[in-house]
Length: 313
Ligand code: UD2
Image 1 (tube, rainbow, N blue to C red):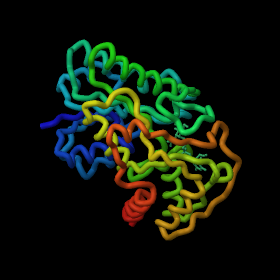
Image 2: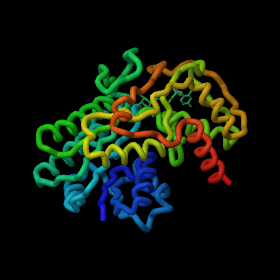
Image 3: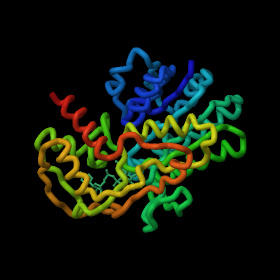
């Protein structure tokens, strides 16, 4: 049986990944301390997953888990809040970088050779430079502790591959949306907040004029990409994961209203400090590896709405 470890497996993307891996009949182990994740996200697969409610910063514990010698390691555990990393740079650093390096180091020292160690990074590493689309070799500008740690952990991941022969790869997510995303913080993904407002007939605050663009991608395509990249024997280095298409926020909201058959009450407010105007992935590397997205934006929005609406009833 194929054995996979997913750190952060009770989070938004992690839980979707775990469910797909269980469907593939992999033997899945999850480590998540539930600081951001929620165990209920794994409710449908609870009896098929080995779940450890534990902090990835507990090195001794992580070493005992890694001794299970996994085929695939998906490293998604993180404090995925830029704002939190600005408030608590040292603590978030322990999770977002230190724990990653410790895991890589343990694999190296023990001579474990997973088929792939996959680290999940973020488009946040690109910062505010205007060049678009963002290629994996575009200039980076990590502007927050979160982005610095993501970038450094990517580099460690790749260097452990180059220097010590581990099979490693890193990915940079663009704007991911879909089931199991938590809408409860102002820094949650915008489409989870929109969904919540539509469901509860609440007013949505749109920061700026809605012309800001993002490369939104449905979480099921993200999960398929993660599995595809990890299983491709020739994958290496860093891959952007998006659709390679940018959409204005207001246009996406209109598409979502169409899918939901409902109008969103929008209140416009000043643009957020530090908000970037445009974001777009160049996905040439991902395409060259052979990956094709199944869902796309419109289908993703439709399915997301059906899921959210069904849950609310
Ligand atoms: C994403 C990441 C963020 C950081 C950043 C780096 C998410 C959820 N956030 O931020 O962590 O990596 O990229 O570039 O992936 N908006 C509203 N109303 C709301 C919430 C958001 O108008 O209630 C706007 C927001 O001002 C922005 C757009 O929607 O212009 C997208 O916001 P977001 O937080 O979903 O994503 P982003 O790309 O700003």
